[in-house]
Length: 96
Length: 156
Image 1 (cartoon, rainbow over the protein chains, first blue to last red):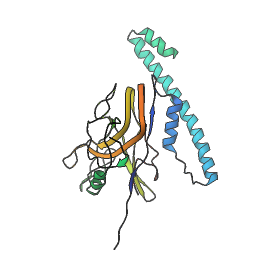
Image 2: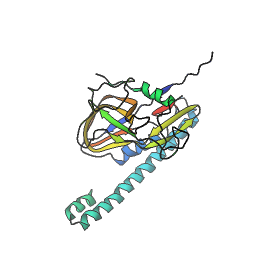
Image 3: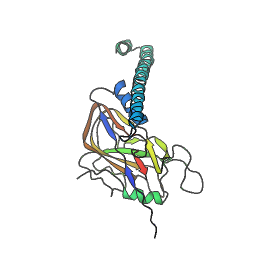
Image 4: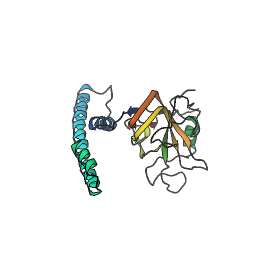
């Protein structure tokens, strides 16, 4: 008699919430790196250290990219509000 | 009433019946012809909900209601199934309810496509471990890394 055992287990999600604000670049970047790279607890220490260093570097690159993206989007929104006569809203956005 | 994290038993049976297609876009298929991926959604539930491995379908009973939450939940973005070593796995992109005021204790991932004559088949029950609340903010579900020992849905 032969049998093949197959296991199907769900992974664990992480839930993040905010109050009276959206997520900032640091929080989004942290999510992104956790999604891109996962480091095994049992990995070789040298490889683990390299992976941790890479993860740290990646985190700051993503933070910078998010900041740039936010600024760029605000420029777009600024122009949309301004061209529709909402100068005060545009100014608030610009000074954020 | 309780929410117990599990891959539903009905889903395990339905895998063997070839009912679900997690492919992103066209590809895969449940017949001899190439099909296209089904639409998967995630719905949030309060702590009053009863969800477990025995859940077979999406239900509105004790589903969350709140600002900027629509019954049925968010549509997920599939990631085409892949393999890692001897494990088959699939993943979804993180999902966010923006500018929301929500309190949820768990969630249900389900297949909203009609497959083999039935829609809203339950896939995975998620237990957040405690109530999670967003107040005029973001409610984000971050799926784990798509690895052999971490992915949200994996068959080893």
